[in-house]
Length: 429
Ligand code: DOR
Image (cartoon, rainbow, N blue to C red):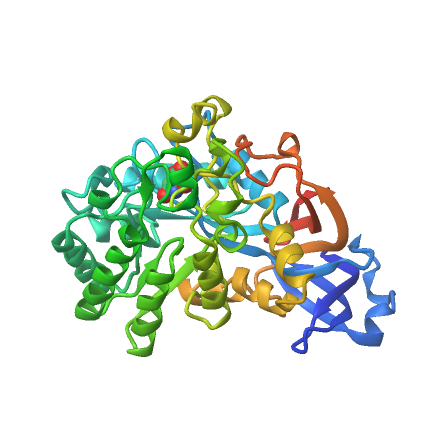
């Protein structure tokens, strides 16, 4: 027995929504019927039937940058709660960052995360391992052993690798294994405990600022190292026009560089921060309106390849410590799609196909995943989205343990209604 999804819509290549009926069997998409024949109810007898009531069926969203906090910070999030939050946001594959405690820097920790994800997770979880032991930047981890344990790529996300020699060695090693290096770009000597971007907001509140160069210096350094080593180099959460300039040039030169951007860096600038509320504090910080424009244009012209949330849950007590002392990070799973749909698709700036591409097909292509497509034979990972549903963001409803979002009270449209992973409905409203 399989599952028929009836009365759904698919986006065709012309960005038109067409009637569709989808048959799922043994975890795969077995048949897709579109157009007039999709309305005939014939084949569904003897199978489970999901009536999509006109909702859009899209490939499950993919998020290549998330913090699940397990092991070590279970009070912020667990694999169980984080994957439920992801499912509610329409995500079916997520890649978790290694800045846990212990850091994911040994095969044992990789195994722990993989096993936990299989037992308690409800979406596909793939895991990064760290570049350096304990993310301290002093000694490389054992890349081959981590790969054999199941890590798919390496990053010290949360901190930048400060030593150029360490980064070069890491890239050479990763290149020899055919694996990518993913970099959190931040030069610590330019940051010195600043909580927000160097700009109007910092000046107004007498706070130290994180300058754009602290990100771009690492991007420039790493592009040169990627050119020298031939590694696939992927830049985390790009936030500045200077980084974009460097990535654009590197791509023109044929250097193997890819990049990601977060919804908040496409929608908010430091001018939007209402006051000293740490729910607006993340790293990289909200930048100037000019940087926001540069990020949007870079995504549009392909300089930036994909959208990621950087889902970074923290407890309410931690976030209540104020702008200076609270940790960096905001949650992202449960607002990402409706936020971008409302701000960019409903306003006519992007097509729906464009947005979905950056959250499905493109991340799969960049990291060589089988997911990201809604086609016969592909994994049955999909999301049904109610494009007409309007809802106000209410963190109290989040399935994440984290409530730390700047989008509280925003009225957004286009909410996921059901999420299917490997042919099983894992979440529905
Ligand atoms: O805002 C952030 N939060 N940026 C990071 O780089 C790390 C993350 C976290 O782990 O909380």
